[in-house]
Length: 269
Image 1 (cartoon, rainbow, N blue to C red):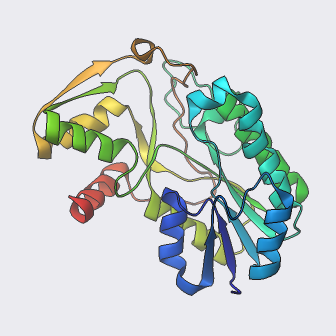
Image 2: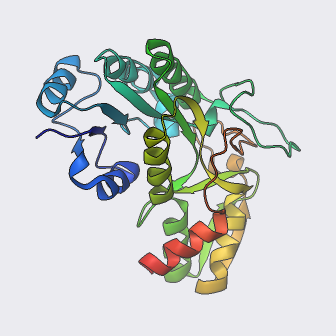
């Protein structure tokens, strides 16, 4: 089947949203059919589909797993991108706000030109993947995004379920980042490609919030209560950035965070 777009990691949140948007213009692939760490499986898919663009949604996104297994993180998040870029097709790959460490008290969102300092192994592996894409072809595209959520995955559905069923949710109060509704990101990606975009973009809904603030917003509809906790209370393997709010200097702006949450609520609950 020939198509304009080949989506890797298509079973995930963003891949699902992209395929819904693209219809017959997109073909989705995922494990075990296409493994981004296996150049032969990539080449077979490219030969079969003959895409103009590869949109790479395949990644190891479990931040703590990446910290425990850095070889796996780099194999997928860096060298997987290299394998896709080596096909010679235009490539768009997804990165993360964890390329920024942030610090307490910062109030200005990180823009595309700001210096990076990875918060953890996950952020480091994604940052190296960015370089693999852009060094291979400056017309490739890297999208940094943050805290994605969709129909039943991500912070918002998790908080909603916990509040609705248990009447309480624990939510972190000492981290600020941006939420991103997967369908909004999918639309922005296709718009950028359609308008000849290239290089690095930050795409997320502003303003940045803490998870606790997001949970408190949902309490307006579900009732219940939010128990504030710190990342340190969770005793996780990977450090998190205290502040990693991102914004774009390139004229790309998604609907606001509360607009996105309200549309999610109307669609799915």
